[in-house]
Image 1 (cartoon, one colour):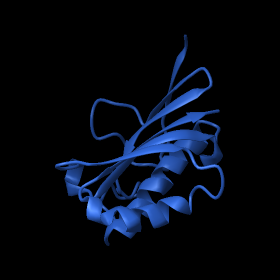
Image 2: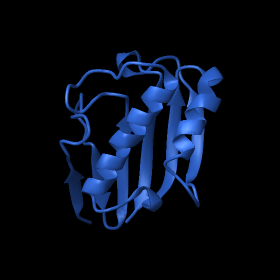
Image 3: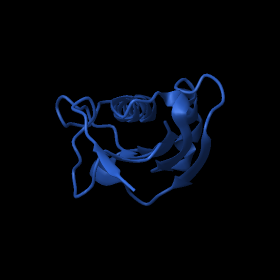
Image 4: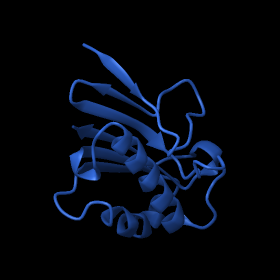
Length: 126
């Protein structure tokens, strides 16, 4: 088994001892993304809609770097700071999966890094 580390400047650098994504064979495991602007390393301004858009764009950049598209995503996990934000998150999330959306779990968590409102990770088959 060959493990390939995926790293792109088009997504935020890892803020800990982990990789943006790891590819093993045809499977890509993308680490959770929070709404950091990759150019500045700062949180994007705004609420859950703006944060979800940035998170999804960050994930998309990592998946693209690995040679895939959002159509390759088979599973995501969404971590929300407050489940009351689900509908707004879901509206933005849906725009990234026009047809055949991936399986998904969504959970409310006590806190996220840098006080983000949302974090999303993904698994893709390339």
